[in-house]
Image 1 (cartoon, helix red, strand yellow):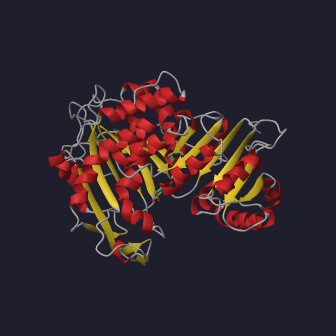
Image 2 (image 1 turned 90 degrees about the vertical axis):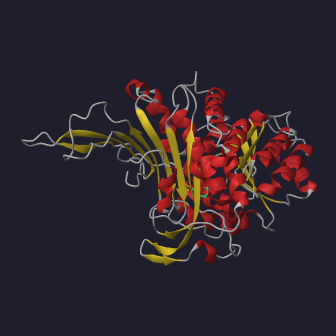
Image 3 (image 1 turned 120 degrees about the vertical axis):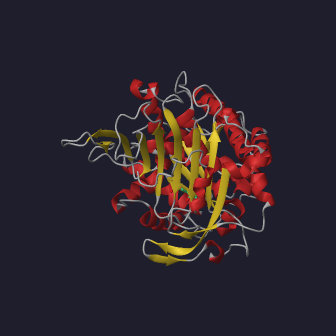
Length: 487
Ligand code: BG6
């Protein structure tokens, strides 16, 4: 069990994010014996509850959202919590919070973590109140925030500036939960612990890279947010772009947070700016219409509750980027993500170049398929596709997959939040996003945002339950490039 003696305050403890992700993640850490013994968690919320009211609520949420919920761990888990009734817009609530967090005579905690599981418009008001209440640059206070970090470059820069008025950059933990995913972290190990892999990880061998995050679900009850955001802001600017940086970065001098983040920023800075006049060649968007997902009829985006009439918000985006540096010049990185697609799957597919000479052919006319490295985030897998001789009298070739059994029997899957919460408690910022990463990622997508912002009367559609619009191949460089749906 970790002995990190810190305290945790969750603002928005009864909200969606807390219920679906944070509380189950904390509970799983507790059950796995990874939660610090002395961890105090203050659940800050508006509801007029005492600790018992909070515990009933917590119990209900864990029953609904925690996997393998076992009631016998609950009583011990509850001991970590105190419920603080408060209002984030009321300075007195913060004074009370201060008294609770720093009782006179008590031993100083190793660190106090403020998790802002609240609406993004409330980030700055809460940060200001925390700072006025004395939680600021002077002590070991950590502030955790979730995306959206702004909705374009300008607003992201403003947000960073306002945060920096109260907290140092090393106190700010910007979460991108994709960095907590096992296979995403494995990208670092796969690349930098395997000489054979790293030797071929460049433009001399790799033809192109595809990053896909496909979701089968729709927008659920999030129209208020999603209709303003769309897939580019909701997923591509952050999650997919983060995965891209890990695939493309140079080996860092160490795994220390800033070493790693410096390399990621270099990648973002090397991405070729998309010319204003050529956005359609680099990016395309679409919206789901009605369709059938897993044998169930579902409505189109326009018919989802809360979506504006004639909304042209994209639920699907495909885009390509070039990284103009020595390693990657000329290699397209194709990124796509969408809601209401045929399956929930996220993957990285890396296609190698053709052999310089085609000694073998699959049939008399077809060229044999080049090698692929296929990493699937969900479900987890790691495969390499190569060609072998088909047993028999003829010299025929067929593809096979070398399939690494990524997880041994009995090795439990951790949710991304479990890993990231532990990192915050331990003060490890390597898997959190630095302010300049956020800004550079916005800079990369800004030309697309601006161009789409001007096209307000039309958006292409795709049937729910499909793999997206056929036109998504439009952005591809070569005729033999195609989206790899099966991994
Ligand atoms: C969130 C997006 O950041 O990531 C959601 O806001 C999306 O729209 C979710 O559904 C996907 O996360 P995961 O871990 O299920 O792939």
